[in-house]
Length: 287
Image 1 (cartoon, rainbow, N blue to C red):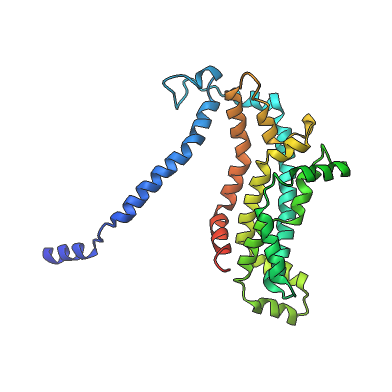
Image 2 (image 1 turned 90 degrees about the vertical axis):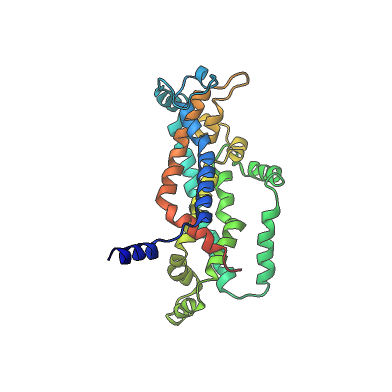
């Protein structure tokens, strides 16, 4: 009996896969290195400005200065800035995903003359640096009277972006055309097929691209710096810039305000994390 038990234990014991062990150790080290700036930002937000550059550095401040957070919130009007950034990011993201998915449906599920050429033209816009179009766009928006408004930050996104169109098209190509044909049999047009049949199947890619688009607008610094001049219309990146002066920087308040600014992004990622990686991976499989 004892010998049979030993044989069974030896048989059930799986050999250690040292490749996986080494891989997990490397990934753990990379994760710690990647998280260290974030941890240091939190640590610095709980220190006095004079203690941030103290030597040897302290990762856990003693004592912790929690008053940095209400001071950073009140001195810069962080609440108003977050509301402004939220308005721009949500409006631009919803409009962008609506138009991008519609254009992607046209390239993936319809046939028209010159479709490949049009698609290549759309993709070619990704190679144009934003700095090239900066001055022409500013002149156009100034002629429209849109300076010091949110229109220059929202309206361009309402026409979609080439990257989102590409990713959505790649995902829609995986959906069998039988779903589209069944919609035609039921008397649906292209718009209704896109809205009620194809779009619900693209939720993973739609959500993941929506999160990335939201983050891009939330962290946008160049656009608001150029078009926004009044204090009450400033976004979060502009407000964070106010902690940096010509001769000194309030690092403790800057780190505290940066932690506050990260909260919406972290909450959005936690809510949508199961869609982000799967959506991006599935969106780039078929070409």
